Amino acid sequence: QKEVEQDPGPLSVPEGAIVSLNCTYSNSAFQYFMWYRQYSRKGPELLMYTYSSGNKEDGRFTAQVDKSSKYISLFIRDSQPSDSATYLCAMSGGNQGGKLIFGQGTELSVKP
Amino acid sequence: NAGVMQNPRHLVRRRGQEARLRCSPMKGHSHVYWYRQLPEEGLKFMVYLQKENIIDESGMPKERFSAEFPKEGPSILRIQQVVRGDSAAYFCASSPDVQGSYGYTFGSGTRLTVV
Image 1 (cartoon, rainbow over the protein chains, first blue to last red):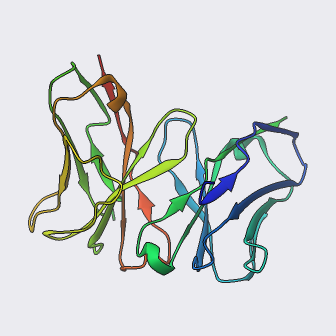
Image 2 (spheres, rainbow over the protein chains, first blue to last red):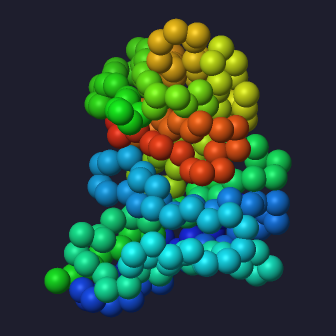
C-alpha cells in the first residue's frame, strides 16, 4: 500500500464546474498538508497549505483535512480552462522530517 | 528575488556518461531537497541537504548517485554512468525551515534524457 493514494484521473469537467480532488494517506503522524499545481513540463507550484485538521479557503480554492479519516480534499469553484493542470497532494511531519510525500497526481482538464 | 534556479533545463547524455544537475535555492533558504519524477508518476524523494551536510538520503539509489550542497555555490546532484532508466525530470526544492512545514518552492526542473 502506498503511503499516499491519489486517483490519477484524468478528470474532465466543463468550465464553471466545481471540482473535487482527494487523497488518502496511511501515516497518522502527518501534520502538514499541501496541494501543488503542476502545468505540463513545469515545476510544481504550491497552491494551498494546511496544518492539521480543518478547512482553508483562498479565492476559488478550498482545502479540507480530516485527520480522523486520513483524507484530504481540494475544491475548485467556478473552474476555468487555466485550471487545467496536474494537481498533486503532499504531506509531511512526524518521522518523515522535512521531506514531503506526494500522491501520484490527478490530471484535470477544464473544457471551455 | 529569484526563485529556485535549476540548470541545465534539458540535458542529454549517452549511456555511461556522467550527469551533473545544479540547483541554487531561494535567497535565505538553507534546506534543499531533490525529487525525481518519472512520466505519469508523482514526485519521489531522493535526498535532503543542508549546507555541507546530507540530512536524509533514504531515497537515493545506493550506487551511481550522489549529492552535495557546499558552503559556497549551488547544490549538485551527480549521476555517474547513466543508464536509460535514469531518464526523468529532476526537481530541486528549497525551504527556510527544517520541517518544510510551509511547503517548498520548486525549481523548473532538469529533464535528463539518456540515449
